[in-house]
Length: 466
Ligand code: AMP
Ligand code: ZN
Image (cartoon, rainbow, N blue to C red; front, side, top):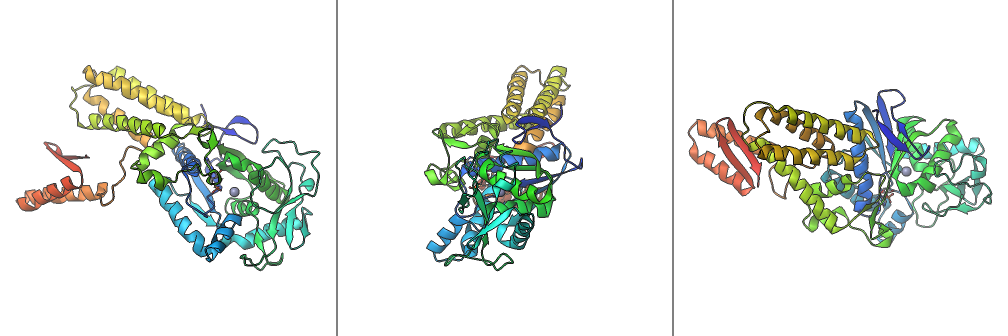
């Protein structure tokens, strides 16, 4: 079965191929860097990482752009309170965001772009909208005239007909089911940053940021636009209006929205105070892979209820997979190949791939892997699993891990990377060959201190982490 995604625009699961058959042009609304992101935000970004990996596995090239919102109401307020420029203020959180996504092993998009570095593109977009009669000016600000764009509401499937025209909203975020003319360019206010432009001095609204940058790097029609579900309205609806009013072409073919991470039936949110940052959880001793596992384990269109029990269950599940991998790598099996095990391996792989093709059903994909692990563990106990089955089973686990990326333990502070361990082992082997036993013992002890256990076998040295 072909690769399929649920498209918010059509409210249907549809077969996905990129428009040019080769490269997926994808845009993701990135973080507003006014604070540390919380694990709710990171759930959405983890979904996007899995999506990236699966598209690449399915043979597509990716051109993925994510914005960094580094000018926005909350940023300006916080920077002013601290007496900092917005650049000084956001630099700290942008860096922290990149550290967080690296820790969670989220692949970086091909392009990460800052809003403040694209003001001319936004002004140009607003000029084009103005030329088409889609804007009006009130005092020093420029607004989008929703009444002029009849398709407004097509993404969020809200019927806005009968709304009063001309009501305006100036703030970047609003969430009432109310179509209000939104601000494109905000006139300058005392002490706020502003840019000179053909529209007069001011700063861009949040919504114009994304459509202007997306079209600059990805063209007028994107293959996929993603974000958290809360962005559907008004942010994405506004992006569609801004883009399509100018181009007359569909702005994005597929809209993929991640459901929320919840805490006790409420959305995890900064404003509700019910959030954990990645740092909070790492400080409590949870490994990044365990958090990644938890965030990846629930399909992205289902709400994920965050609990510490859930986090501990994720740790246990991951431990099971690691133990299985170790058993596979270190046990001695009888020669030969068992056909039953072989076909179970193939079946698991088909089920895994089929589940991810089906709108990235990660729960079902994990289910296939765990069924396989359970059955072949039993096969190992019964002596049915043979040495000829090791390679295909290991390949299945490697395939799983190329998407989920959880099996490799993260380095502890001061720990050694796999490459460093390999280099030390090579040095030790050479030391032994030249009968420098003092050095070889030293290396063994150093590795032991760092939690690496060596096993000398007739086929060479094997190692594992404690
Ligand atoms: P923001 O920095 O607030 O613009 O949010 C960054 C991303 O995180 C957006 O795609 C949001 O939709 C998403 N997001 C915010 N809260 C949650 C949550 N509780 N669960 C999942 N995604 C969220
Ligand atoms: Zn956006």
